[in-house]
Every structure is written in C-alpha cells, then in structure tokens.
Amino acid sequence: MKIGLLTSGGDCPGLNAVIRGSVLHGIKTYDNEFVGFRDGWRGVIEGDVMDLPRTKVRGLAKQGGTILGTSRTNPFDGPNGGPENIAVMMERHSVDALIAIGGEGTLAGAKRLADAGIPVVGVPKTIDNDLQATDYTFGFDTAVQIATDAMDRLRTTGESHHRVMVAEVMGRNVGWIALHSGMAAGAHAVLIPEQKVPMTQVAEWVSEVHQRGRSPLVVVAEGFIPEGMDEVLSQGTEVSGRPLLGGVGDYVTAELEKLTGIETRNTTLGHIQRGGAPTGFDRVLATRFGQYAVDMVNGKQWGNMVALRGTEMQTVAFEEALDGLKTVPQDRWDQAKIFFGR
Ligand code: F6P
Image (cartoon, rainbow, N blue to C red; front, side, top):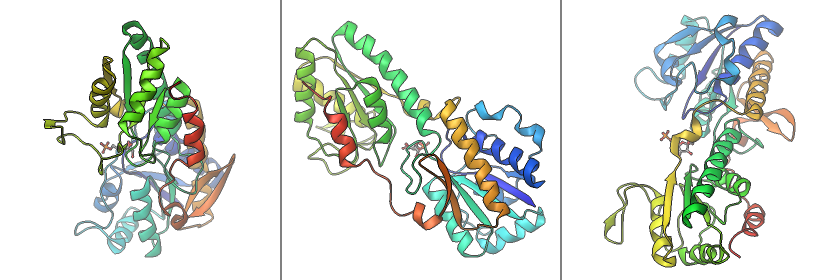
C-alpha cells in the first residue's frame, strides 16, 4: 500500500517525529511505501508530492518544524478541491490512503473527505492541547517547557528590579499552556480564556506578593478576556483612547502598573513556543501516533483519529475529536489559584 502524509495548519514540534514514526513502522511492518504532500492540503489538491524513502526520515525525531511544509489550505477550496478531484490526484500518484496530521480545522476537513469516501485517517496536532478525545497532543509539552524556561528567566530579572513581570503565552481559545507553564514556574496569577477575572483582582494578587518582598509573575494566555470586556484584545484595538500595540499582555501590563503603581513589564513569547526541537515526551508521543496511524491505515479504519487515552493509543472517530474544544476545567484552575496572591 502507498500512503500519503500531509501536515496541515500551524506547525508544531513533533510533526517530523510523526512522519519518521509512520514511515519506519510502515516500511518495516507492512512493506508500505510513502510519499509526502507539500504544504498540507495544497499539496494534495495540486499533486505536489515528494517521495519519503527511509533515508529521508533519518534523524528526524529531534527536528522542529515539518519537512513537508504546512499551510491552512482547505481541501474543499478552489476549482481543484473536493473529494472527486482529490481521488483523481491520489490515483495519479498511486496513493491508496492519506494520513492527515493537523488540528481541529485539518481534522474537520479530513472528516468531510472520509464521509465522501476518501480513505483517510488523522493524527491530532496542536500546541494548545485543546482537542477533545485525546489526553495530550504532541507539541504541548514542548510549548510548556519553552514558556517555563522563559518565565524562570523573567523571575530573576524581575526580582533584581522589584518589578511585576507579565508573560503572554499562546492559547487563543484555551488556557492549557498558561496553566501548566504558570504552575511550573510558580506564577502569582494565571489568566486564561476560561476564567473572566477582573483586573482589580489581579492587581490585588500582585500587590500582596510585592508587599511580601517578591517580584510578582503574571501569566496571561493570548485569548484571556478581562472581566468587563467582551472581546479578545488584539493588535490595533484602542484601550482608554490609546492604540494597543501588542496583545492582551500589553494591556494587562499597562493596567497593573496603573492599578498597583509598581513598575511592570510584558514579554510576549509568540511563535518561539512553536519553534525548535520537541521534548523527549513529545518525540515519543508523536512517534507512537505515527506508528498507530499506520496500523489504522493497514486496518482500513478510515474516518478515525489516533488518540492517547491514559498511556494507551486508541482509535476514535473524527466526530468525537471535533465535539467542541477541550477547555481547562474549574478544578484545575482552582488548584493553580491556591498559589495566587498572599
Ligand atoms: O493553534 C496553535 C496556535 O499556535 C495558537 O496558540 C495561536 O493563537 C495560533 O496558532 C497562531 O497562529 P499563526 O501561526 O497562524 O499566527
């Protein structure tokens, strides 16, 4: 069987480890052949393929990014999109099945294609860890580690200057990265989209920490909406009559300085959280996902996604993975909150 791999959506540390795990397992166990489609669904639609022999994946587990490239192209867009065209393209390249590695958008596209008869299975990917049906996605552990390391550094410079340090991390819809990195770094406030906290409350926590001689550390997820505001703050938004140059981290910083009178600085970590080598945990998870996806293909389990449940790999239907986002539950937030303020 000849299998086509594609990586789609935002990149994520561990994508190359999935590719390597799939190719090596498929060649050794099933005598499969592999090709990769360049830049996600664009490569599938346009027939932009590269061979993936064993030599091509050598040493790949530790490499960040994706050797296949990625894009946010929708497989249904344009005159060449849609299941009929994709089936023709697959036949032209003698590709029998697809493994789509991506997040919510990618898997939603894969589901529609599977429903229309395209033989496709999915591998979940997102640093945000917000996909349902899997306990973890690869890339999340790496993002948390990068954010934690950054915050450890912010702590020492904050302590030297007796400043409040704010770190804005990724997570436009959910606060998993903020929660985990904040807990790991000992943050004094963690602000996430799931919890509407008033800025006066954050200022109180910060002042309490400052009064006991510590430099407060505040972590804010990019999708946090302070109580009293009804939409995500983004670049270009006007706040109190002045343009907001950065994201919510800059807003939180300005507000805290105003409310507490303590010098405050923001650091927005941005795409640093998605770059570079994956952690050992993510390499192993991604490799196992790739291997299991190949098992699913050889078992013709179309319309399904591999998932991590506890410590085991499992098969779950696309619709289960797409049933809303996995948000931070109240009890996890309450555990972190014990460490805020006093
Ligand atoms: O979904 C992953 C993610 O990294 C989000 O945390 C972030 O909001 C978004 O992608 C950024 O996307 P882009 O790379 O397109 O700016």
